[in-house]
View (cartoon, rainbow, N blue to C red):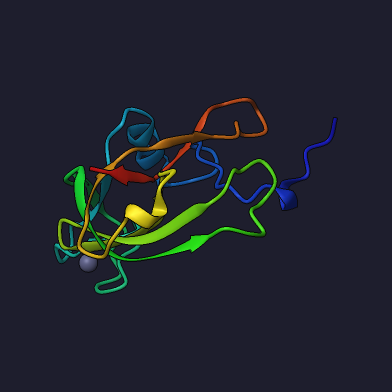
Length: 142
Ligand SMILES: [Zn+2]
């Protein structure tokens, strides 16, 4: 069966497709990491293979805290994509001085509040075209 890449909204996470594949390997281990530029020390989210400040392509991986604070969020109750169950919560979460856009996994979105505590909870999504597992960043109420 052919694989319709255009219908797959999830990033390809293997070394052959992404210079940032180590990010996804750590994500699968339950670690939230990002890149720090070796040239100027800039810490970025999302992880970057190329520094927008000094143009260096040398970077180190840095572990981020697993706890964060809700900076803002929205709840999607209708029009939920196939394969997902609603309601979906999309948030900006403050973690270690960075702002991370990610879903918050909860069945009770009404209990969420700006300033509320959340913890990192990576989620496994559809496998890639070659059957390798894929994970995405997500949080859950703490
Ligand atoms: Zn830099």
